[in-house]
Amino acid sequence: MTSYENLPLYLMNVKVFVKMGLIDSSGWIKRFLYGLILIISFVGQMINFCKTWSEDIGDTSMNFYCLLLVTHCLIRFFIVVKKAHKFEWFFLCIKQWYTNIELKGDPQMVGTLQEITIKTQKLSKITIYVAALATISAFLYPVSFDECKHMIEVQYLFFDTLQTPFYELFYLMQVVLVTPTILVLYLPFTNILLISLMFGELVLKDLCVKLRNIGSENEETMLQDFKECLGYHGKVVDLCDDLEDLISVDGFFHVALFGMILCMLLFVLSVVHNLRLILMVFVFVSFNIYMIGITYYYANNLATESLEVANAIYNTPWYRGNLEMRKCVITMIAKCQKPLQMKAGGLYPMNMETFQAILRVSYSYFSLLQGLNQ
Image (cartoon, rainbow, N blue to C red; front, side, top):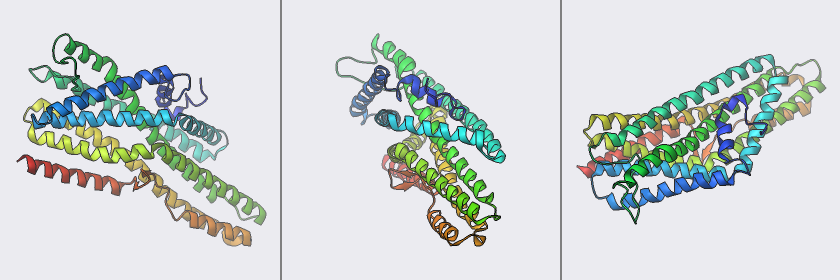
């Protein structure tokens, strides 16, 4: 068992990745099977979308939403597999940092760490509940029609998936294999990202506490303590850089795909008249807004907290230190003027302003589609 697998901060999220073999070098068979399931579903969706795109526009929009969802899962799958060692190293660093604060940290920060741990565990459970509601809606989706339908519409070249026994076989496969695969890829990745952002905010608060605890009794002691804080800040910056390296590509596709996903779901709401379908699509809309909204909320909190470090530096008794101490203060304040922002694809800052812009763009695309449909 890896040392970080049972870290309370991540609850069962990291353990899921380990059990799936995504970040375990010995689990290549599991990785191959999970990847194969997603690729087969993706190919079937692409064939179905190409064959049915000119038919009922509501069904086409719903199929496009499912295609984007599986595409996003595929992207996350390849990111985790390609950067498995980086994920392992990142979790190991978090484990060591967590243990260090727990054993040697300021009593105030130890209490905050425990609060954050409880909060992250509740967050993981809430995300699971929200996803469970969306999954139940997906199970009920094909049942709401009189004709045969799948949760994820697929077609293949050599047989008809809507004819017995292929219909029953593929429906069972989607319930037993495809849906669990999507969930165990999508949810842990999201939870790990959110929890890592919250931990980044925590260590920034820990840095502020260390800066406020710097005394003014001895110049050499002040300088030594401040240099330790300067090195601590460098570790926080490295942590944020490592996290951005892991989630940057996913963040870019999340921005691009989320706009289209939300646009498609809103369009489906505007063209369908079946109450059951309207309720189901409303659940999907809520799920997607919640997922990206809470991600950008915690990324925004991280950037805001990073700016508080400069205030904590200025409030230290630096004016009683020597010349070297004052130079270090100026250097560190200059470094802290730029917030520690996560960037999607290295381009778009993950903050609430970007989230609002995505919602506006999605609504603009929805208005355009609605006008074309009319």
